[in-house]
Length: 510
RNA sequence: GGCGCGUUGGUCAAGGGGUUAAGACGCCUCCCUUUCACGGAGGAGUCACGGGUUCGAUUCCCGUACGUGCUACCA
Image 1 (spheres, rainbow, N blue to C red):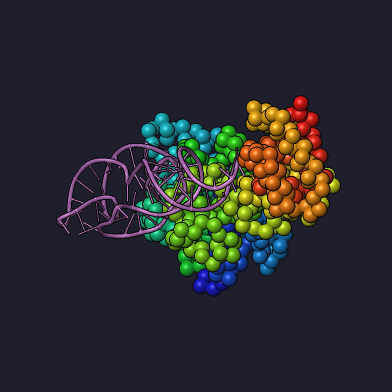
Image 2: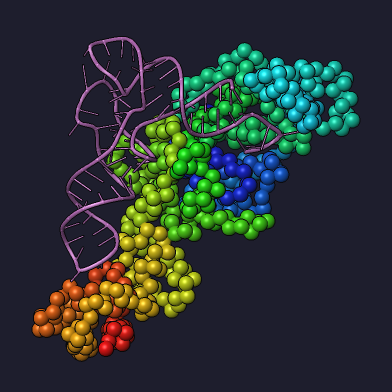
């Protein structure tokens, strides 16, 4: 395993891709790229009952959006095809049988009713453990207790069975984690996990070990929720391929709910009003849409950035990192051990930073689509670019370009009357009428010239410039918002400016 | 219940036996702007608790509490 760095992300196609999932991908990816290694995506679809149509494609779409491109996968190909576990089904049984030959596994014929009865019995007896383990396996319906010919007869008769690992009692399993350091598990607390299900599919436990071996995975990153089953995987490595072949493990901390009590779930996003999935996920049966970061107007650069610093930092004060910087600076040793609560406010801040940082060309098309979808047509690309540069520092998510910039495309549909009316009088009216006259004669339409005239008339009429500016702003924009007043006038052009002042005069006029 | 993992401000976090315990988000005040932002200057707010070890613990050790994960023929 001292060879090439090879890591894998192993999602189950069961629905939307969660924040935590993307972060796992990201850490895998960063580690691989930092060490000139390979990033593999293997689809773990061994549970046919949970398989969801479209989920696999959706996962790859998300990775694509994030810019985390696999080197090998179901759709990218590679030397270890197939990369979908359901298509590798025949491989697993052979290893399960090998374990039985070696005495490290056994056939179990217990029905789910029998298993339940066993657990009830243990519970009634006040047992601390409800597990299928060395305490009870000799009283269950399996090949350990049955005579060989009885087992054979059951199998020949087509009785459904599973294959379980046989975990020896009183063994200590040392385990080294790149993030958590040295640990030890007591096999007395580990149960005889099912390795091969009755339908012939492997469980996760068997499949990861075999595929990680076959695909020559050197480092395995996964969520902390897998830590308790690590001893099963280690035992499997020991029995099947040897511990020296085993990848280095790293168990990532969990991303928790902002308000405490558990790991972040899709439900929390719905409840608290923020996305949890990378992209919109449409449930194929219910058609229910779960909003994603992308559709809410996040930039992939920001999304990656915010995920990277949730549980990791480089020890400096830097917080804004590009993917390239992350690859360069990432180190697994600096990943936190404790879980982190997700903070949507901070997430938005990252997006704002990236909107300001990136050239608008990076996201202009997406902004254009937003305007189009809101019914603003005939958008000139150069004009849109001008507008975007003017307002980008007041946008947090992409749709803000619409709310912050609509007046560059349409005249105000209403005015902030409360700001204007109390100060409106004949003198103001007179002022704006001469402003119209003077602007009409203005030859070069630029912010400085407009401002010069604006102030010149104010001085002549002995009026307060500030108050007039506020009014002109309301006339042009509709409310007290936006960048420099005269640059707005310059941008929307002479005709629009004069038109808007006249419109406003009609409203506030007499 | 059992087993695992964790615990620095409201949140993300740096740090690590002796420090005024960084920084960021959020919040508050002020400046800039007769707008909204951006930007700038300030402010409030923290080492879970109890024992050790030590001249000295936020830092090391042990407990406790709390949080969290697992305890499926799900991953």
